[in-house]
Length: 191
Ligand code: PNS
Image 1 (cartoon, helix red, strand yellow):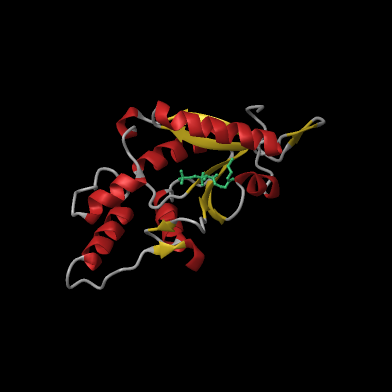
Image 2: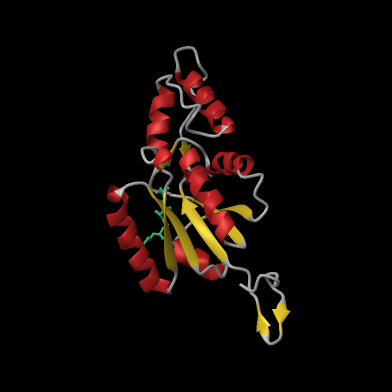
């Protein structure tokens, strides 16, 4: 983009549209690995949407509103990032919001096969491209599923997740112990 042109401004006969991208995921819950990708992608685009996928076929630990709340707090310092929730195909979300690019983090080669398949399918379906961003090696082992398991057994995940997520995981684990309130799993069917 012309360095002096703001998104939406016109210079001569050229209109500079904001460069938009979406970072989709389950974020159940968001980890520091996700935040690394979100923050770096936010520096590359004018507008970044972090889209929380509502998956009716998979049970989640946190309800979609809780996942959204934890993300909102974690990215508060990034004014060009907003959180949304979606159901259905990510390319339909992209079309509806005029977003040409999906950003995905790659932790290891094991992520690549499936991500490549999805990227090619999404490009074939709707011409939406995918930008793969290698995750910071510091987080290459990090996954929401591992974080949930460790926290559930009382392990320390402080260094792996933002503070609110750490707090919520601890509350959830405590509620499952004998004498706890027995917190229930989130189900996207229920919101
Ligand atoms: O955090 P996750 O669970 O790895 O995220 C996976 C997600 C939500 C990004 C992916 O499953 C997805 O894009 N789902 C939306 C449905 C869709 O578009 N499926 C077709 C992909 S080719």
